[in-house]
Each structure stands twice: as structure tokens, then as C-alpha cells.
Amino acid sequence: MKKYNVAVVGASGAVGEEVLRVFEEIDFPMNKLVPMASARSAGNTVTFNGRDVVIKELTDTIFEAEEIDIAIFSAGGSVTARYADSAVKAGAVVIDNTSHYRMDADVPLVVPEVNPEDIAQWRKKGIIANPNCSTIQMVQTLKPLDTAYDLVRVDVSTYQATSGGGKTAMEELVTQLQDFFAFKLNESPHVKFPHQIALNLIPQIDVFLENDYTKEEMKMVNETTKIMHKEIEVSATCVRVPVLRGHSESLTLTFDSAVAANEARELLSKAPNIVVVDNPAESQYPMPVACVDQNETFVGRIRNDPYRDNMLHMFIVADNLRVGAATNAVRIAQKWVEMEGE
Image (cartoon, one colour):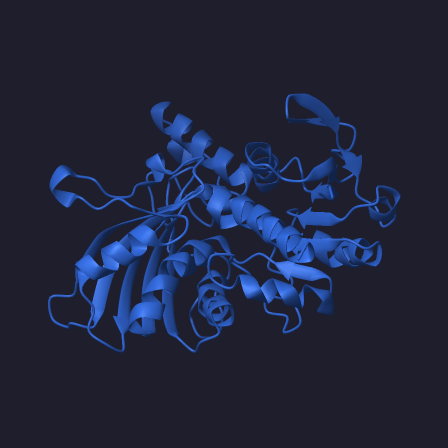
């Protein structure tokens, strides 16, 4: 079997670190790992498979010099915009974790459990885009139900962890909590968020657009349509919550036909990388604390609408650094390798 040289751009960041951990857990045909980052982080090391690997400086020439086959970008949209073309020109396929290429018509936007066939379009630009974290776990859940009942509308409210804003956002929450217990929360700074996040909820993620939805909310709208190849109505309200890891979502789904909660529960239990946790009588349902370091999306509170037989409600949770970023990127790489070998 051919083995591949893999670059992880942004290896010292929150998502980059998770990419390395996911690769450690699977049997991937890797020849060598090349962690990359800015000049500021170059020379430091990351631990991979029990050994220290030196981070190399990201440059235009390093992809060719290291003979990179697969480059996973997790260092922000500006870094992707600056260096992705250099990786492609050097012969690598780029799997991009940022929003830079997601809505590019020539770049496939892929969740392997939903639209793996789209990976074949990678040759148009040499790039495969990884969707937004909140979109990934949602479409994984939507796909089997749409196939069975013809989904026509999604209303979603998200409860998104601070890790979606990176390491510094997580640190801001921890610092504010420490300041709270030191009776000086009113002095605690907030830089990553527009308001205090400790002991609070912020119904804003990213900037507001002309339609009064945020950019994050419209990502869920537009990405869902592209991934599922279907004009599904989607309305999202995205909320930042004082949780370190794990995005939660409350879904209201409207179908073209009647749907039974028990049937939906059975369908979801058989869907790939979905775990149904749904025993309310025993207080068993998905929660962020139980999804950390897990590679599955957890679904529960599945119930029929009390007024309409074509509506379902449910609650879903996934580790946003894993399912919502690193795991999906690595699964794309796995599927790409499988398709290239056919």
C-alpha cells in the first residue's frame, strides 16, 4: 500500500493538536508527518506517536521540499488564502478547515457520512473544504432522516463551546471563572467575546449581516444546502455558552411526510458515527461533558411535535474540535486515499 507524506498546517493550535491525536488513533497509511506553523512556533515540537516532531516554518517552498501528498490546513482563513495554492502547485491535496473555500463552486464541501462522492471533484482546484463545526454534526443527523422522510425545513439553536474561538477563547472563560471565585469578575477582561462569557450566554457568534443573522448562522444555512445538494429551508440562532468543549444543538425538523419518533430513533441508531442516547426517564441524553474526545455525534430527546405529525424535535452534541473539525478532516483524508487507490 502506498504511504503518504502529511502536512498539518497550524499544528500547534487547538484543531491542529486534535488532528495529530486523531491520526494517532487510526491506521492511516502515513509515511511521515510534517507539522507546520508560523515562524513564531517553528522550532518547537509536537508529540506524535510517542516522539517529538519539530514544527517547521510554513513557507511557499516547504510543500515541494517535503514532498507533501496531503496538507491539512487549520491555521485560519488568511493562512489558507496565502499558502494553499503553494501546496496544490507542489502536488498536494489540500483539506482546509477554514471557511475560505467552503462556498467556492469548484471546491467540494464534504462530510464523509453525507456526501463522500463529492471528494472526486477535488481535482478542479486541488482543494477539499471542511464545513463549519456546527454544520457537520447537524448534517450527519439530517442525512438519514432526509432519505427516509424528505426533509423540507430545519430550525436550529446552537449552544457553542468557547473552544470554537480557539485556545485564547477557552483561556478567557477559565480566567473569568477564576476571577469570579476571587470576587473580581467585574475586573476580568473580555477580548475574544463582545461580553463576559463566564456565567453568561452570548447570542452572537461572528458579525451580524444585513439580514440580522450572524455570519455563523448563515454558514449553517448555506453549507447545509451545498453539502446535501438540496434546497432545504434552514434558520439558525447561534449562541456562545460557557462550556470549554462540545457544541450542542436543538433541532426542529419539518418533513414532507409524517414521521414517527420511534422510527427516527431506529434510523439514527444505524447511521454511521451517530450514537443515540435517549432515555429521558433515566436522565440519559447527550451532554457536552460526555462527548469530549469522542469521534461520534450524540443524539437524544427525540420526540414528535405535539401538534404536527410531520415534525420532530431532538438535541444533538459533538466535540467541536473533533467531529466539528479534526475528525472530519482526517475522515476526508481517509476517503481520499481510498478513492485514489481505486
